[in-house]
Length: 119
Image (cartoon, rainbow, N blue to C red):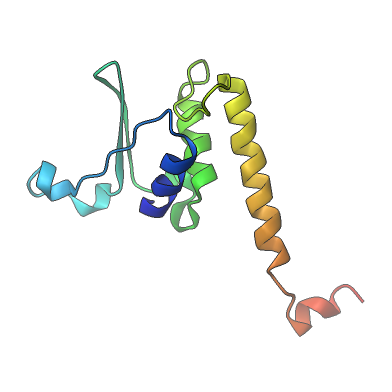
């Protein structure tokens, strides 16, 4: 998650990302709730997301995080590109996810057994 948020913070500069060690903030914070994302707007907590499940589990990607965050507030997306509407930003999230999927798929090779399935 940390890598994903770091990548998102570089791309979506209109969104502020802050990171803190959980136990520095709340003593004895339960590990099973990590990572925890707290979304603020206008100084007020809007929602709290705990764990990786909503973002794809251990296969979390920056795009899955951005998509989930934006789907929480479709009329006012959380991650937006400077100078773009919320809809344009969400389209960019989907486009980025497709590009990542294609790139990762190109790097995969079929095993001999799998390759035989297409003969």
